[in-house]
Amino acid sequence: QKEVEQNSGPLSVPEGAIASLNCTYSDRGSQSFFWYRQYSGKSPELIMFIYSNGDKEDGRFTAQLNKASQYVSLLIRDSQPSDSATYLCAVSLPNSNSGYALNFGKGTSLLVTP
Amino acid sequence: ETGVTQTPRHLVMGMTNKKSLKCEQHLGHNAMYWYKQSAKKPLELMFVYNFKEQTENNSVPSRFSPECPNSSHLFLHLHTLQPEDSALYLCASSPGTGRRTFYEQYFGPGTRLTVT
View 1 (cartoon, rainbow over the protein chains, first blue to last red):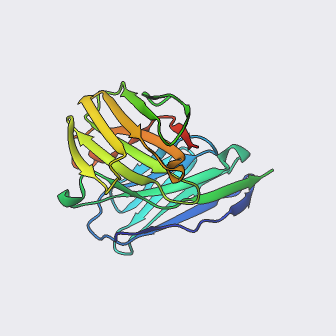
View 2 (tube, rainbow over the protein chains, first blue to last red):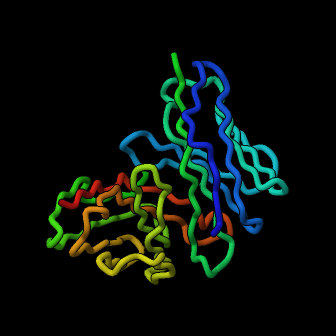
View 3 (cartoon, rainbow over the protein chains, first blue to last red):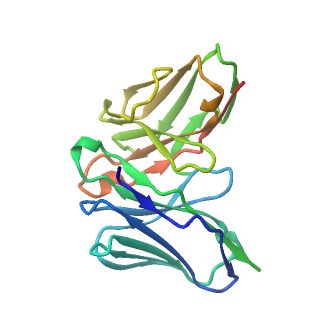
């Protein structure tokens, strides 16, 4: 069973701080990595994707990928209370036998306190 | 608004009822997905369609029956469900082409299903 692991949290950070969310995955063949944000009672919203080792920045969000360590992270700078949500890490399943699926972690709950 | 719509948004049904969930995407994507999300569990992939062809059936009970008449529409037909089937059912779509962009999935708002 291919695994995507995330700390369930809650991760609590003060407003204005950097929130760091981490994810590890077990399948070395995975090529595509995604972060989704899910507010309570809502559906997941794609906020970042990363395909190559290194950092990718988009506004206050930075995704980091290290394929050798099978590790992907999401940094949120200048955290706002509106960032409070569950963040889902998703990893592509590389083999055709698995169809065209993403493997999701259980998510990390982030709470940004004013 | 992601360009993926789902109806109904809420559904309460008895165990002997038959109902259908509908999903429509306006993104020009070729792949569509059904997921189940239960409390405290990761998203569970149920079905995948690519260019209207089913490419994944993730050991889903036969009381769930998908239908994909074209690349823009996806249905999930429900019959004789169990209370443990109560969950949020999410539809998603992705481009369906490109080695990496294939997987960029965009979700609809979901249908909150309660089985009584």
